[in-house]
Image (cartoon, rainbow, N blue to C red):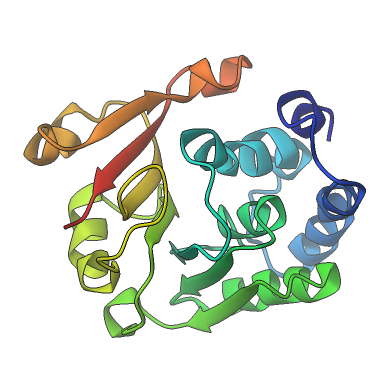
Length: 207
């Protein structure tokens, strides 16, 4: 939790309580359904929660913004973002039922009424959203392919509607087809811990 408070000092008491509750909830569920590596669960806040919140550093979503989290797994980045932006609406999608089960259970315990969960492939989702977010779930090319149809044309945020995804390692080849429109962010500019030294954020407007 220390990392969350350090970089987001203006959180409400309710938000702080929900972030604090994540540790016990994920520790408990991870013993039943392994959604986070057992070696990594002790790094829940740094590697998963704070990493997810890098998206909040790229864009502060306006109230009523609709966001779909593609390949959410156990609820990342969608659940931390839903806590961060309680006035926005989040849809978390994953094709693996047991992962959606964990994410749904965590959100239910937190009383996250601004998040809903769909066990399906993104290709089958027909709803429209302002933004698609994802955390290393698939290549940028595939992310564009499965979500382009779902991005609403009407923008109301500081960035035009599109995709914001979190990636690691070398991205030059992956971003090359979109180099004229994509924006890359070094997450180490937001968060100073060594873990983020190779982490990147990618924003791609979808017209």
